[in-house]
Amino acid sequence: MQLNASFINFFISWDIGNWSDCSVSCGRGMQTRPVVCAQRVSSTSRIDVQPSKCPSPRPESSRTCMNKPCAEWKVGEWQKCSSVCGKGERRRLVVCHSVDDRNVTDEQCEGLKPLDIQICDMGSCAQGWFHSPWSRKCFPSCGRGHRSRQVYCSSPDGSQISEAKCQSKKPKQKKACRNKRPCGGYWFAGPWSECSSTCGSGVQERSVICVKKLDKKLFTIVGKENCRGRDKPEMERPCEQLPPCQPQWFMTPWTQCSASCGTGTKTREVRCMDPELAPSSTCTANKKPSQQNICNTQPCTDESVQQDPSCKDVYKFCRLAGPARLCSYPFYQENCCSSCQTYQHRKTKEKP
Image (cartoon, rainbow, N blue to C red; front, side, top):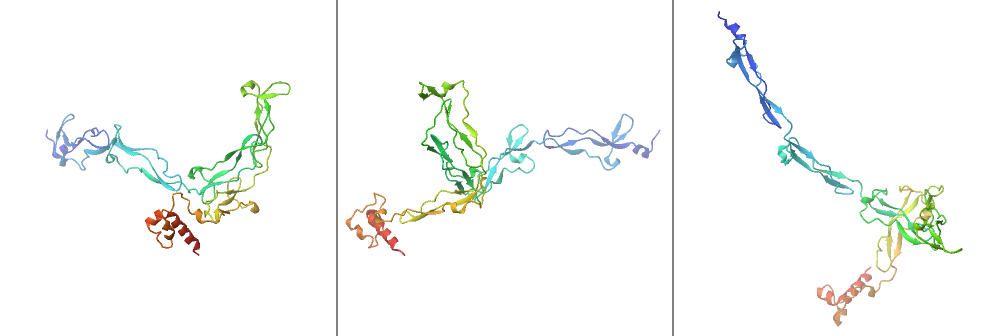
């Protein structure tokens, strides 16, 4: 029996195979599959025919595939800012890292490279250190002790900022002192000291020493190991309730004198600060420390000009070098040093 052409064409179709594995193990690759136009002549056999005899469109025989990247960006932690105040920059390590655990060139990583440097702003820079006056009393009230004061790092607007932003050395907050009254005691406990503060919170201390009885009325101080096994009396306790602290005046150190002789001035900044070291306007005005003082009041004399012992006159005619206007020449500056300096000092004083 012979089949007509339309019946034969009914058995013509695209024969599609399975997709192949990706052409690469990492990154972007290709997959392919067989796509042929075939005519079925039986349930188990076929013959290939022209692609034009199969219906359109032809199924795709290739496509892209994407595995895990062959290399990717590896980013480290940001370093500290290059500046402790104001603007600076910070960096971090950014490298292109391959799947076989090695660094490769940046071109092998996809996408934009992450930033490895950025601007950082650490806030206002410091103006300097401010401190309160030294405490009037030596603490504790007997024997060796110390006086204390408050010190803080100030920004230009007067507020307290991190001490790291004040680059100069921090002024001392304590200094040693000695009381006229010696301390005493054994597991003798001495009297409680006065409170370390007159306002806010403070502590009281007392001396506790180990003593040994020599006779009925004579004792001697011994090492604390002699009192081992005995309960040592407490040496510190909080003060009873104190009134709240009031604002007080803080000041900077004095500047250098504006003149070495003949009366100059030195200045300092003075600010009113509350107990939290915030600017205040409630300090007692008539107790405000002075902001300017005179200094170096001794008169300026010609002898004060010659401070360097090596500055001497070599020749007798040197006294004429100044009036003759020869002191501008190196020869006279070196060999008539004393006369030239004295003459110049006098001319400076004579100027209106």
